[in-house]
Amino acid sequence: MRKHCTMVELLAIRDGEGTAWARSHVDECHFCQRELDLLYQRVSALRTLPAHRPPRDRWVVIREQARRERRGRAVRRVGFGALALAAGIALLIGVRAVDFPLGAPSATDAELAALMTQSRELEATLRSYGTDGRVLSGRAAGIIADLEDRIALVDAGINQVSAGGGPPDQLIGLWQDRVDLMDALLSAHVTRAAYVGF
Amino acid sequence: MTRAPVPVIAVLDDIAVEQAKTGDLEALERVYRSYEGLVYTMARRICRTEEDAEDVLQETFLEVCRSIRRFRGSGPGSLTAWLKRIAASKALMRVRREKYRDADELPEDGAAIGIAAADVGLQLDLETALMRLPETSRAVVWLHDVEGYTHEDIAEMMGKTVSFSKSQLARAHLRLRGWLGGGQHDA
Image 1 (cartoon, each protein chain N blue to C red):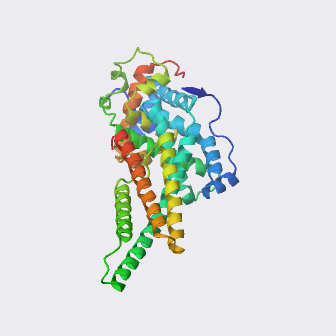
Image 2 (image 1 turned 135 degrees about the vertical axis):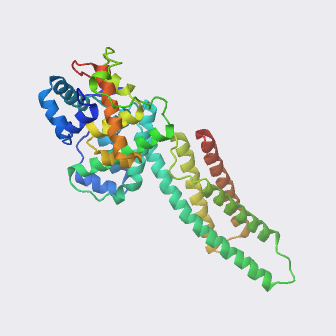
């Protein structure tokens, strides 16, 4: 025959789930009554422990990360637009090649196609890193946000020049900028991934 | 560590919550300022280190920034409950990820109270005793006895069974009882 209640039984009594034997035993046993009282006291003391305040203000980091994620979503939307644009330009190049079957594709067309391919590959690599949801330091988030802003600006420039039939050299320059920025963005993410051990 | 013996939730009006739902960062900052103490305190009680608790705070509010548009609660307590749930999940995720398992093996609680008194006499204060518990046990104590989660809630958040939660709670109290002795449990 057991002498006293176990902690499981006392907790069950406290939570209104005690067995008939345990409840009856506590009514009669001073030792178990005291243990139950101590349990109530302990929980009451836990509830009055002082609150903690974070030692550092984390809002700036959170805000920058939230902004970065929003920009990332915007960049991806623009990125899909740029991909569609690239497909259109590639189609135009193809049409020109059909129109002038005797002439080889110009160096400008080839350069543009190569840059667009490079940009697509960098985007695919970046997506494969699954950059959303990672916690970044304020500095890293700032660098990445800046790069994403610049990419968005370049994409806007590409759209504008393409729509207005601007000079090919200008378009090549913009695509080269996009490739360079995408490369820098990828490096920033890869460095961060290596740092946190992913 | 800075402690504040003041209420951890500042007044946050409904307008600020509605603005935060639109993604307004200033309104989200007001939500953060109102709840950072509550979230950090819960994280600090569950996680082992200040750094982990800070990371939980950051992850919780990032999740808030991402998801507050989908928050459909109304009434004064619903935002608090929603935030606490996110914070508890993040803290428990961190506990699992960090694999703080080294001290999680506590003795079985088959014995009656009087037998489990190996640590009687240490007479730790409550805060020290709480931090001395293994993460999982401490998380269960805090979530059940202080935050008011049921064993069913805790089991779901931890990916464990209800009986696991109950047994962790009993083991933790057995330990605390031993460390604190029979006197007052002052913080």
